[in-house]
Length: 278
Length: 128
Image (cartoon, rainbow over all chains, first blue to last red; front, side, top):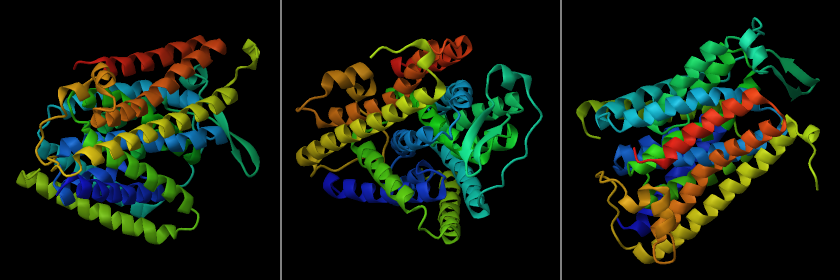
């Protein structure tokens, strides 16, 4: 296959991944890497590098809209980014030392979680938590716009949230994904941040987290221009399209389809890893 | 236009961050696309070899190397330059937040933001 054939193919696959990622809210990165490795036989390290770059593009693009609407809490984001960027550095260093077979198995397990989460749908809003002294000192409490006007919320269990965020950053750096799901869990489940604020703030943080591992990826030669070009442009185009279709799409059917596709990919990644094929 | 200290607040910071992020992503995408078209027109008939990991060539692995190599004679370096612009977009966002928190006279957040910026610069400065 020549570049003239390979590039449009990668662009197409990435656009579908970006579109599905935007529609389901799970991000395109998590699907791009298995698609490139399983369908096209790309080495997982090149795939991870290209995927990480595309993650920065989609998260920054989406964050641009959410920040303006006033949902994101930039103070929570800024504070927790200390945890995610440190985690991302650790993850990226680990990625360069971990055998690709093991990376493949870990990736499969993360996909299994994504499939399960996709089939389950959006969790309900969390009840308010115990006031937290650290949250008050860091001015993390905030408010967001809703149908009934500005809605205030309090943040709790800051230390737990910070620890989970470190893990989310490490996973992001290790696998070249946004790990938005884990970031949302840290804010929504641990800290009691409203779901809408959690998802938009997570999106806001993904770009910075990914940038922290991108430097190391670049330095190790994981970011190959010929491959990263169609992946980045494809995922970005797909996610813009997906975000526009969000209202029209049949979310339930889509969630189950996505869960099915991701589930199959998960098993394939684990099997390939165990067989030592990747 | 003069900006007085009390005009700075989180809402204003959010609007500027929003514009900054969008501009960064669109500029990066445009540069990557330009480099991509150039790359396909010159090396479209070559076979890609991504199934075996060799690592991208050394000049594409550092900020200085990419800036030095990017130009009409090296299309892949132009793509890489676009990707670097993309990576630098969140970094610029953090740098801008640092200035914003300083104008809000919020010492705690100036310190917190500085830590994040330092981590990002450490990662990009390499070599690792």
